[in-house]
Image (tube, rainbow over all chains, first blue to last red; front, side):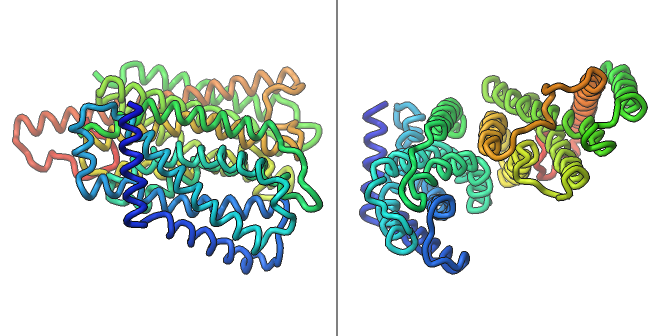
Length: 224
Length: 240
């Protein structure tokens, strides 16, 4: 299974590197959302709860763009057929797609977080950077675990652009709650406060539970 | 023969619900704090608990469908989910009325039951859309079951997380089944809960019987008359 996951992941990353279909759009969308928030909230700088909320909403919406495109190559160019013919575990497709999405989100955040720090954030980001990266990874994992499954459900319906966000947004509300609660103390005005361990634990548990569920049911999406 | 025992079940439901709400109006004391308004609790909370269990049951039926590939499990999941969705609307409406009566606002974001039901309602609102947008019957059932499993697991997790997020701000006293409720209130609440659960089971069985009967009639018409009209039109509901 590991080799299959590696091969599919490599294929997806290579495809993205050559066509640049998803990541640039996601990154631009995330930064644009930050700019929109500046005008919508009419604040020159943000801190604390509000900063964490704005940051995560931008990532979530950018992730929706990636989700809509995650399986497009498989669906439109016969990738599913080729995959079904190969004698490999079907779940490896899910694992590879979730990891590819994780990589996409990490690149988007590597662009959007510095932009956020320059454009909107009031407190300095440097002292809390390691903790922030940890929280980002836990939140991203939640988005990828649920997102890859929802994307696979949506891709073969007639209304895929509608169904993917309609399913993914409510399912990801616990991730938003946990990630914002965990990020807010890091961005607090007048110096970072300690990380709230219970929210990290909540995020970790959410990731683990939905990874297990997705692992169990993904097979059933690929039967015909 | 479909709907066996439905008559007894319906009578039992009517009896339990009548008894429960007779007790609510004529026996239980008014809440010391909120007065008469608090009595909506005997409608709101049982509905919420039954809807929650219905969604989880839908997930279990969905898992059974994925395991056995028997269309009847998909039908069971479909009926359980859409009945729970109707109850969820009831939960939102009664919760709103309660919040207005007790606290003066139609909506309170620090009320975890109400907030998590809104999220769950929004999620399950897509269930019918998802079914309708897949034409192939077999795949529709499979994808709907995957959704049912995913969402069924999501319901309790979501509830726990939303509760955790709010518990810092407001310590909860109302709406919990423990927490020093007098004996009369507790007993009435339990009877109301049983009545609501019975109502759910009755409606579920009733709709299952109806759907099964329709499927049988259709199969007979198709076999005896070769009637093309008997073929189901495109629908979100599962057909056997």
